[in-house]
Amino acid sequence: MERYYQPEIECASREEIRALQNERLVKQVKHVWDNVPYYRKKMEEKGVTPDDIQSIDDLHKLPFVTKDDLRLAYPYGLMGKPLKECVRIQSTSGTTGKRVVAFYTQHDIDLWEDCCARAIVAAGGTDEDVCQVSYGYGLFTGGPGLNGGSHKVGCLTIPTSSGNTERQIMFIQDLQATILCCTPSYAAYIGETMKEMGLTPDQIPLKAGIFGAEAWSEEMRQDIQNTLGIKAYDIYGLTELSGPGVSFECSEQSGMHINEDHFIAEIIDPNTGEVLPEGTKGELVFTSLTKEAFPLLRYRTKDICVLSREKCSCGRTFVKMAKPMGRSDDMLIIRGVNVFPSQIESVLINAGYPANYQIIVDRVKNTDTFDVQVEMTPEMFTDNMGEIKTRQRELEAGLRSMLGISAHVVLVAPKTIQRSEGKAVRVIDKRKI
Image (tube, rainbow, N blue to C red):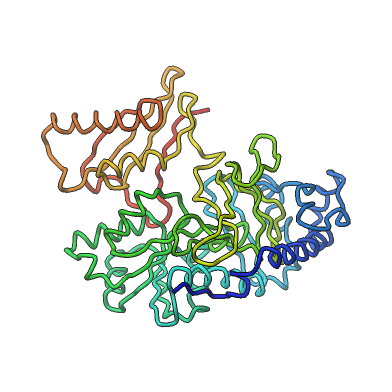
């Protein structure tokens, strides 16, 4: 029996959702025009005023906001409320340059926590559950978002943050945690550690996991589900828009429902900026309808995905986004070919390897080199060089067939690739391009 945190909106009719979006968009555009000079200037440059925006049909007239704008306007240039009304910041990890700092009023935090609560309820969470939040706390949005959502649902919340895996497992066992929230790579590591401790899935109290903040494949999902004996749900978010809970998976596990009362999603052509028809693959763009302190309109996420309005068996009427199929920016282009780490992960997991790998790209004499280091499982580990060479060749053939270019595979001993307690570092690009 499917449960909802806010059924009146999660199962609202398309007409009701659209009417709400129209009303909120008109109000938000006026709020941004009046309070965010940086964005008002962008609108003026495009010849748009709030009067031009009467409904979501006019959304395409507004200018985009990009990561570059966030850097240029850092730290206070995109704030929509006076500092005295803001109660918190969260920040990105800054992997691609200057950190993004997002501001929140108390109202912003309440709505964000509602979104995370919807995700927890969609994963089967109730006030009877024990929810262990093993995302990082602090500036990273993962911990605070799911922590707040867990409180709203009424779960007993264990704010372990990431790291100290032995303690994580002790709490899961002693406090009988039923829901685990963390990055997929950390979930896989917890599962791997439990297996080494001799724990079988039926000895682990967990029933569900909510995993996000990095790309992961269907194969990795199956792997985590089997090791921990749980159902693994995807969650999506960006610090720029609030954090996790922009969209979330339901029991169907076939894409994530976008919280359309708070966010409008568009798919655009990443090269031309043109809005693409529904069902077309392109770059995901979000407009925040309810954020007060940091209201972003038409923010380009760089995530490549598809939207679908097919009826969902869970009863929710929100549009669904597919799991991002890579990025329009951090996608690797190797020898002219687009390569996504998730494709490599699929090949490895299908061949029985754990999702512990590292891609190393370099450029030697104007040609890209493409090495993939892959960890063997303890069962596979051998010092028979002939056998290792055969295994490496098999993986190289699998990768060539998936990617259309050849990679050099190096099998390494178990536990030699550094484990991540936050986002896994999968790619080392040494090219000076």
